[in-house]
Image (cartoon, rainbow, N blue to C red; front, top):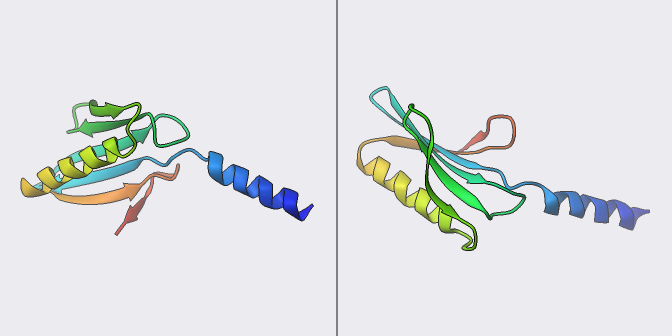
Length: 101
């Protein structure tokens, strides 16, 4: 019985959907959102979405290369910070996300 409970707990943990990563960048009352969206239960496929307040658009996507979306999002966040934006990273957990500080 105990082994069944442990196996079930591992199965639930392993099949949980990947949580989207979101960066909110602000400067002088302007907000930009950069999101790494996971489209299935794992790290692939994924999209990097950018929203300046006029609707999100997909900047990059990956079907086969793990880490591609995360790397491009990180580089784009660095570019935003070089432009004077202050960016905060959030890990979406289904309830809007918690800031990772």
